[in-house]
Image (tube, rainbow, N blue to C red; front, side):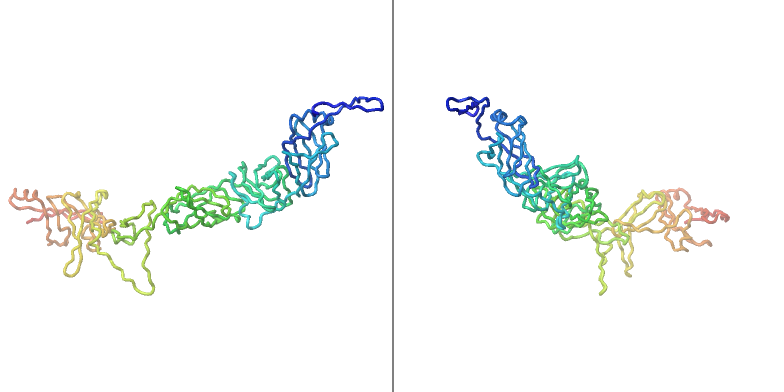
Length: 538
């Protein structure tokens, strides 16, 4: 007999049968496609939904009451469900912990087991799980950036890996703001998940659901702090390259993106090869709370390579890129030579260093270490001044220092080991006037001699004060070689001239005179100048 055909009922008497006005109908056992969830709290309250076959809905509607309620049995406890289209919804009652068979009665009387693919369905009841505050070992992993991605380990007790394996973790900010992500039950005391991306900074309460519907609750909530993305800046003096032996000090300044409690910061740095990312080495980093700086020492690396630094503020649980490139290079070979080998104690000597095979990193730095010893005297080898770098003499015009002329010099030594420097200043290389003469022993840095102003101080005054008078350049044909003498006269003055002076003298009778004109000096404004004197010259 087909279950879709109505059945008439009759009462059979001694003589004939009397048909009843109330009909009946047969139906097959209910075909259930899905039931969810398959687990819930022992306290009840789990909303369970069953999806039945669509072709049987009309028959089921004819079998139920006008309010479309269907009785259910969870173990020995009965509840009522509601049928809407092909979905039946009921609320699981309080149950003891364990698995309970589920039955339902479409005719309000005959309970039949709920089956999916021919297998009976059981509802698992478990006590509500509780989330515990983190211990000291996990305190540093209770914060992460708002961009999400931080692996989180949630501790507690009563976590259940149900048959339908629906585990959710909720980050609850308020009734209007919360985010739910999937989780994984490791055991009865640990659930893991990855923090989601959120649009706000602050602490969120962490709740766990083992059936995808009901979340844990405890008097002491577990909270997770979302902070702004970490922004780092490299210290100005921090190098961008280092030796393969390691030991290079790197320092970052944390601009933003730190948790409120800085004591939980446990920094770790991953050194990652940029080319293939095949090699990663981890090194601890020190965090200074007052200056908010992170510093670490680069580890050794087996071969030259470009690497990147990834930073973790929570003990390696979650890393963020620092966007910094670092070059590992082979240790530089020994220095073969330097030039010049000497310079003044005032510094600023430009030294050329001969070091074949060195890598140009753009950050080459040299360290000068003074020789010091308190136990014995040190023998210092003074480099020769006439070898290595050339000796140079600089002539700087008094009025225009930009027209300085530099000529090469040489060291001359007499029989008494008195050393002098000789140089040749070619004719026409300087304009007529006074010049400063300075000396360089290393070809770079020149002496700084205090010269008197020749416009206000006479050469005779310089002799008494033992000052060096500026060097004077004359233009032929007149060149005064002797510049000072006694006021009583008698000093022999040598005047050197060129071919023009010889030409002028030969035109006359061979006789010439020299006129000496007094010059008013500084500090003698009120003194009366002597008269001009004309003397004969030879």
